[in-house]
Image (cartoon, rainbow, N blue to C red; front, side):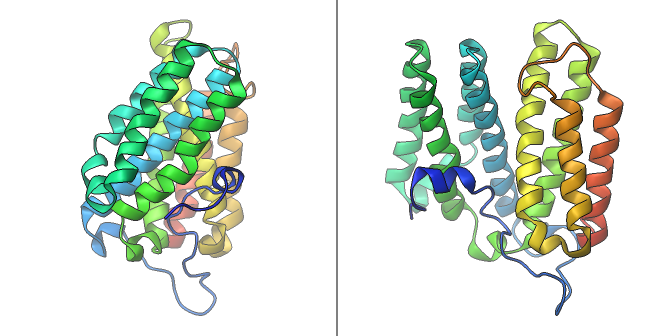
Length: 254
C-alpha cells in the first residue's frame, strides 16, 4: 500500500484522477461526481485534500519559524482526520494507528522546536505516503480514476481558498486575518498542485486551468506563507473565477 520513497511521495499530488480521459478519443465524464459515485466517496477525497492543505501550511510555517502557527495547522489537520479515520481503520487498522501516532510525534517535535528538516520531512510523509494510502482505503478505485472527482475537489479547494483570502483581506493585522491567510495559502497551494496533476484530463482547458491556479497563487502569496503588507483579494477572486470556468467547461463541475 505504501507508494515508494518519501521524495516521490512529496512530488506526487492527488492520487485522484491522475489518469482519466484525455478527451481525444472518448468524451470525459460530465457533471458532479456524486452522479456516479457515493457522496461519501467524494467527501472522503475532499477531506483528504483539506488535510493536505493544512499540512502544506504547517510545513511552510514551521520552515519560517512560526511554530505555534504550524501546530495550529496540524491541529486542524488532525480534526479533519476524524472524518476519515473510520473508513481508513476498516481498510487498514495499522495505517490508522500510524496516522494518529504521527500527529502526536509531530506535536512533540514542534514543542521541542526540532530542526526544520526533521519536522517538515515527517509532515511530508503524512502529506504524501500516508494520505495516499488513506485515500486508497477510503475512496474506491473507480472514484479515484474519475477525473471529475479531482475536478470537484479542485473547485471546492479553490472556492474555500478564495473565501479565506477575502476574510484575511477584510481583517488585516488581526490574529483571525492572519490565520485566514495561512489557511488560504494551504488551500490554494493544493489547488495549484491538483490543477497541474489534472492537466492530462483537462484537455484543451488544461493550460487555462493551471494558469489561473498559478496566477491565484502568485497574486495571493508573493512572500509564500508570510503575509505581505498588501493583499489582493480582487485579483485572487478573478483568478479563481477563471479556474472554475475552465474546469466547468471541461467537466460541467462547479
